[in-house]
Length: 339
Image (tube, rainbow, N blue to C red; front, side):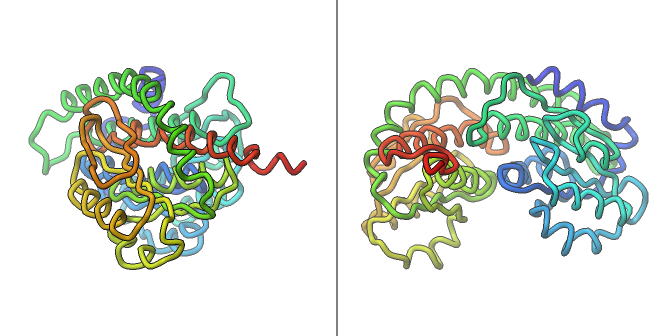
């Protein structure tokens, strides 16, 4: 989908329009909000803009009024909704327009309410979507947001001397190559995810940990466990877990630590060791070859990836583990077994 979505992203604004953007707000609910947290770093390090992800209600009620765009086009608000019909996300985009921001909808459904409110729309539509906990729609949202970040990075800016267009083309090719790594990782971890499900299925609560882009991945992974298996799970930042959640019972609570190469890798290693000391059932999601000796199980991610793009590879375990836990518990997604 990269070529098709990239062509659409390029057409959202002209070169001058991209260059005017100084600040980006990302907003959505559920998986869409998780995608905003997972791509914040890319907008700042690649796009060259200040970026703030906010859930839709928080943006509409506590964020939009204080954006105060300094000039037309300086503030860009991107709202994400796979269905295009999430009421609070539509409300957030209306608030953004009311306070003078340029708005873009990222959605999988043309002609949806969100597209009718937005100034521009990036359509990230997929064939043959299924009524299951969102995985492909999440991937489409990630891809759409990252391609917008690349367009911002392509724009000429007075404080940047590098060849922005050449760099953006190289980064786009990195995204394309990730498809092979996604495939290899999904195949490699499936059997191990079943073993992990057997290890954790009896737990009443679980926690997923990550920082930077992996914080968004942790939120997404927790959501899959809730939606797919009906098990209460939370996503949390690595450092914050050390301050609060490490004190919670039960002592053998499953702790999934998402640890790609990058700025938080050392902290993730530290948390794996600390969680093991506390008696937690620790699962490390890390690059292939990393031993994570203190973990009870390791889910190996194939392929080298920059931290900004790591959410594409490091979320893959979540759907499998949730599925296998649901099977162990005799449940169906969204509690439909109760129907």
